[in-house]
Image (cartoon, rainbow, N blue to C red; front, side, top):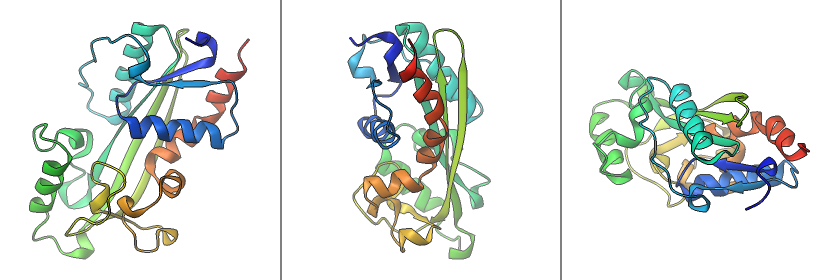
Length: 209
């Protein structure tokens, strides 16, 4: 394994999130920093995400990764906050249908919004990214991506609720999150915004002696 001082561990088994972080590091011109995923380290028991907020859960995951591996670790907790559902599913986004997966989550969300008119289907993707070092230093960044929920899926890229989320951004040109390229999504998304705020801290990791 690379020198622990020049490694950051993404505490996630999500291959798309890992690829996203690697793209952010590359785009920021950060050299000499190896981005690892959970598949690159010895398995450890994943912590219970018992926090009431995205920030609490991100810190729970990052601290558990540091404790298990001794590596600087970054964790993301993210989800969809729908205005008409009073901010839900929120921290429960990944488990909204009882752990049945993305398709079931999307089906349930559509059913809950069946009678909600287009002008009241506003929503925001929210991400909190937490970077924690073995020395106990931590940096936390928040990102939000506003848009609205469509009545049917569109697009095959992304994951989660991406096929139902139509961003407000003009550059999205009426495309859902699942119709954007990976690079376009990085520039617009909630997680892309949060990760961008952590670039200085990632630079510092790469430059450590």
